Structure formats: structure tokens, C-alpha cells
Amino acid sequence: MNAVREVPGLKVPALGKAVALLETLAREPGLGFTGIQERLGTPKSSTHHLISTMCELGLIKRRPLGGYGLGLKLLELASIATENNDLQRDAMPLLREFAQHVQLTCHLGVLEQSEAVYLARVEGARDIVVKSHVGQRFPVNCSALGKSLIAWLAPERLDAVIANLAFDKRMPKTVTNEADFRLQLAEVKRRGWALDDEEQAPNCRCISAPIRDRSGTVIASISAVGTLEQVDDNRVERLAAQVIDAAVAISQFVYSTDA
Image (tube, rainbow, N blue to C red; front, top):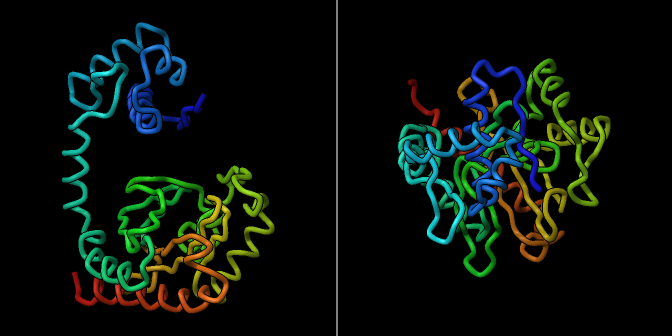
């Protein structure tokens, strides 16, 4: 059973349950009433009211084969959010060009609270596709993109992010303690790029570099990810230089003129 992520201190708990329901159905499409109730931990009456209300709003829907799934209203809202995201819109042409050049799956991501979130995803090689999706969230300690997003944070902000990390052992190489993670971040700052070497998923190697605004503040990162065969030991340093160059190009393009 997948646990629902709890967000403590919400002023409107019912809204938190609605978001939890959306996240649950994103992970487990087709889940039925009983499954939803178990995941949310809510009484039957509350679960029924929540499901029926969200169905009426178009946020979720009944599936023809049973259970519930995400509704088309979310697609509409996601499309509007994408159109209104200046960074994503402006960075996409260069990200597509870069993905085709290196023939790897590339991402654009930002930091939200203590998690990295994909804003965009572009496939480069069509023969080997890395599984990921826009909106996907993941801990910063087991991803190259996450490390590059936080390595240059102010000390107090970095301390707050690290304090919220669970340091779960996702893979044998995943860093599971604060001391080793801080050493990794120091290395990221020294060389200017971050590496995920099978720390989040098997047979995946990822390299990331930050996008900076006009003041030099890191506001996003891009990453290139492939299999160990695609990104072998001989390619890591060369690819890192390419990712840095692409991140600099996007930074200069997006923030080349005053707002």
C-alpha cells in the first residue's frame, strides 16, 4: 500500500485531502473507493463526499473498467500553467536542441520546498527512453538535478532543506546521511555540476547543472540522463561540460534582457 504524504499545519485540511487524492490516483489509476479510503485514512462518509465533489468538478472521473482516475480538468489547468510558466516556455527550444544533440532524455526542474520537481522533459534518443514525467517529484539527495538545485543555496536555506530529508535508501549507492550528502554538495559546487550514479534508479546515470538569473542565483537546473551504456565512464566528463554549456546558454537566453 502506498502511503499518502501528509502536510502538517494546513489551514484547510480538506484541501490537503483533495490534493492527496489526486496524488494517489496519479500513482494508482483505477483505485476503487475502498482503496482510496484506506490511502487517505478518512471515514467512509467523508471519502464519499470528497470523491463525488471532485468528480463533479472534473478533477477526477470514473473509469470505464472500474475505479477512479484523474479528470480532464487537470489537463486543462496543466496546459494553462505551462503557458504561463515563462522559464519553461523560454527554455524549451534550447532544451530540445540540447536533447537532440546529446541524444539523451533531458529535464528542466526547480526546487519546491525540499523536493525537486520536473517542469519539462524532452526525449533525445528514441531507442532507449528513460521513464519520467512532468510534475514528478523526488528527494534532492538522490538526484543530480536535486543536488544542483540546492548546492548553491544560502546556508540557512540549505540547512532547512536538509533537515526535511528522510535519507531513504532507494538504491545501494543512495546517500543516506547528512555528513556524506554535504560532502557531495561541496563537490558539486567545486566542479559546477552534479552526478546521480544509480542513486535513484538502476542502470541510470544523470548529470545536472544550474540555471542562474541575472543576479547569479540558481533558479532552476537542467539534466541529461541515460543508461550506463549511454553515459559510460568515458563520457561523464565530456557530457558534464556539455550540460554546463547548455545551462549557461539557457540562463543567458532567458535572462538576457530586463523584465
